[in-house]
Amino acid sequence: MTAKTNRRFLLSKRPVGAVTRDDFTFEQVAVGEPAAGQVLVKNLYLSLDPAMRGWMNEGKSYIPPVGLGQVMRALGVGEVIASQHPDYAVGDHVNGALGVQDYYLGEPQGFYKIDPTLVPLPRYLSALGMTGMTAYFALLDVGQPKAGDTVVISGAAGAVGSIAGQIAKLKGCRVVGIAGGAQKCAYLQDELGFDGVIDYKAEDVLDGLKRECPKGVDVYFDNVGGEILDAVLSRLNFKARVVICGAISQYNNKQAVKGPANYLALLVNRARMEGFVVMDHVAEYGKAAQEIAGWLASGKVKSKEDVVEGLETFPETLLKLFSGENFGKLVLKV
Image 1: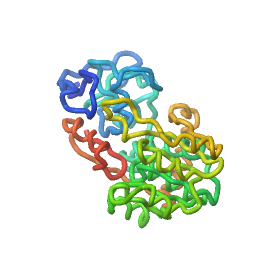
Image 2: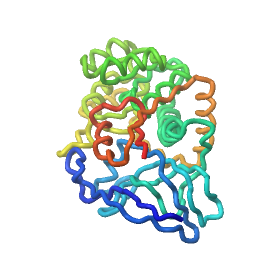
Image 3: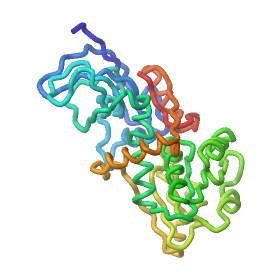
Image 4: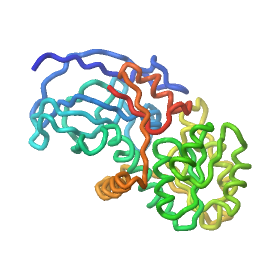
């Protein structure tokens, strides 16, 4: 095999506030050959997710933090170009934790094969990947929407929120999306069929909730936390369900995370707030992927990917998630 060079980003220090290029070491190293039980994968697309900011922090979480000096963790899709593993052959395409680098060399732990002829590869990182699994299980298992419910989704034009909102529509709910900017709000209403939208950049969210949810909120799918969470809590109905999927407004805080001031609304309304981690549902991924694939094929669910080219742009591209610049699922083309 011709010698190859692997460009990769290593986490060099724990970020304080927003991530910068200085928090990483960018290096180029020679690519080795797979040993027994290992594969060599050429990375093609990497998933950029808000959760990556949390993985850089030290401390207890649902997954161990990325170690200093380690390749930055990222999910991705790629092609097997060398293999010493009986289940993976050269030419197979796989989805797994490939890391922010050109090549992955190691055991294919947690990897699974994908078919590049069925859908564009970035879709395996959006609706047919962890994004779609998150939207599916967080909404259906934790939110438990019923026909006629009012479902509010923050970060609604983002990767998870847009899929969750469409699934809620399929379940017969009135769906209201909170997003930033006229273009994103128009997309939610005109393209995805949301019943109402609230532009948090152009109006007071509480005023928007009163207008779009006159009968209150039955399910709140929270991707942002902070002040928007507080506003929705004030509009909860009896036995409402609040799904804590993410809190992107808090991830770059230099101070302690701001908790909900209106949490007593949970008591008054006998409502429930529950955290969600998609890895708890690994055993059910196949079932969910099959159902989502059917919705995509029939046009009942649409998926939008925001693809940025160039591994070298990783630190700056990641920041698009926190400024709201991305439109749909943010994917880095290696």
